[in-house]
Image (cartoon, rainbow, N blue to C red):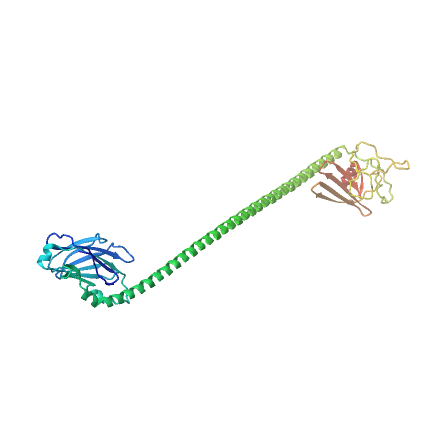
Length: 400
């Protein structure tokens, strides 16, 4: 028997092919089906088989291509289902003459395609079978009921057109969303790259600032340490200079005391001169004898003389100098006794210690200086001019 082709656009999703007769075994009718899910897979799909209004079985595996044996002289409905998709049904009326059943029937092959369910598409027509297969006497085999197919053909085509529009819109929406997602992903990647770049720049700048701050802190610490060291050194030098000056002053004081004591021990009592009964007259003390060869001058203290200061000592046992006219200088016995006022000052400086002694009477006054330098030199002055140590001791250190 030649292959039968049904010239119908049935659902545009239902394709049914009937092939030449093949020997059938027993009183059954074999159908070979294929299920397709538009935009998805057959996972989760199922085929519910109803026989004479009662649920007979459910097939949920191998639906890409499967076979079922239907009993002769029964009414079957196969419901193809998957969540989110419009269910479709096929009706099989297997009633046939006994002689035709004895000869067997050609296995019936068909394909069912399920499309997505849309809220605004009316799919009530799918509550009834989209196709009915029954025995066709003219063909002596099973085939579609053309009258039934024509009765629902227009509804199926209208729904199919609506579904096609929805599918195109959905495809466009999905494409736009995919494009937007791709753009968003690119923008995100670009933003992340820019953020990473900015973060790297910020990290580098932070590192630079931290290095500069650390370097500035180190320099400040070094400067502070240097300043503290210099201050400590200056304070140490000041304390040492003060200690040296104090020690030098104490040493000179002890020397002066020792010299005074030695002078006092070596001092001979002056001869007592006879005093006439007449009222003594006040006589001015003789001017100091000035030795140009031995007189010393402290450099820089008095600019009136250019003679370099020279430290010297004089033997206290030396005889008193004679006057210029050959006469002897008057002694203490020849000079009337007078009241002498005395004032002594001690000035301590970093490089020298100065002893200033003021002597004055009603008629005259004198100033004596003794300068002891840090490096050891000692100079003596009377009224701003250099004098000998002996003159300083005899006049400035003499007691009344």
